[in-house]
Image (cartoon, rainbow, N blue to C red; front, side):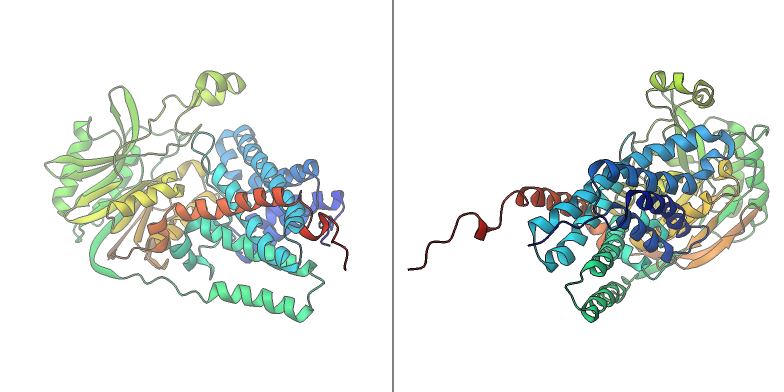
Length: 516
């Protein structure tokens, strides 16, 4: 008979462990980048959840999520104070609480449904990992488009596990990480297995994952790209005259005006006033584009049909904006206020700071620049899995990621975003140019190496011959199918276990016939 695992920890100790798990998890992310601690943090969360009842499972999960996000997104409080910081952290933590209930139910039901050590060691870690990814999927998509920040895979951009994203994507890597930890935790409790067998299985599982080779990243040709970080006053609360950010960008671009480049990239919101409506801005871009004989890709704010858009323009001297992309994933409560009438009474001063609402774009996110297909990402677009898929389906050979990190100062935010950008380069098998108004700015190779970089919070530029990718990685081929598969495994496995646990084993349903 297989018993339901009892809680290895009393509730008070599980609560303390959950609270401690948050900072440990965060330490695996930039800027500390102590990536092994992410695995330790996952183990702490799972140990705290194991064997709990529904109410205490929610409490433990919520506390783990709250302590993680209060540390991980502390940068949201830099200029806006504690209200958005605590509100965002608490919302995300509530999802952790619900996810904690599901994981606890898996610990309760799966051993009943599949008695024996292999049900616990073989199936239970898969279901637990799938449920973890299911929770990451929900928080990344709901409400208002979600917040895909803090997925455990995003801590591994500099780890030996990073190449796995080319095979599995970010959600798939999250699944593998949680599966490994859940397996090792379960082996620790599998006292009916010999210690040598348990150690061998744990070591073998880790080795199996790490021996998977990096996906090959063939390239065909290069294009010479210049990226300019003007370090202008681009923050929302910077008391700067109109055009100050543009002036900073121009000053730094003039330093490389005599160098050869095919494409010059400026950050998000760098070309303001909008050159499609302001003749002076247009004249400046024309002059620079003509002098450098290069196409400029610049960020600005456009207005069309009474709507505002966070846009990227493909600018050619004498022709103006020959193509444009509007950010498809504007940040709720940062770039627009959903249901403004409902939310305003709760924090009118904060809501009123967002004076105009940006409209989500509908155009494709690939520019054709003299035969080079460039995928365009604006700021938090980089966390949206679907937008990367759209780029690859549009034939992108290189990715241009434009961002403005000025509102977060010298916090972890810009390093966290750069880590996600690095994973995207590996996932797609494409070089990626991450250019910020203030940093961190880097040109990243398809295998995740840094080709060139600009020190943060200083004016600078970088010019490099950037390889043009040709590969199709399994992650981009299967796209979100991987996420749906692993999350579905978790939910389906839990539902099957819920049904199977109610049925007694076949040999106990009726007495055996008498032996004659």
